[in-house]
Image 1 (cartoon, rainbow, N blue to C red):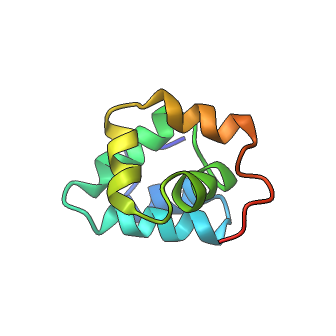
Image 2 (image 1 turned 90 degrees about the horizontal axis):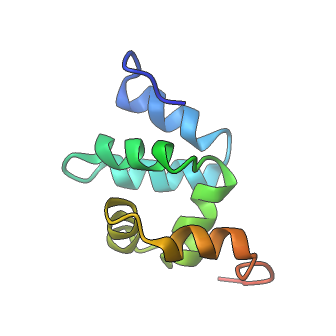
Length: 92
């Protein structure tokens, strides 16, 4: 969980939870204007580690704009996709 004392880097490390794919997604979001807000959205949706990786790689197809839109607009499809397991067996 992100706290008010966390820097953007601290937040990215916490949310990534040691998952390299999640770290890539967090870094890409932080490179965006107001990027820290997107990390806060992920924290609010209880996304971390592998769920961030799944959201970025499989749901968004590594398109940070798609992930950003899903987070900001709290798209139901994002969480439905992650929890449905439709991404299992997908290779990209």
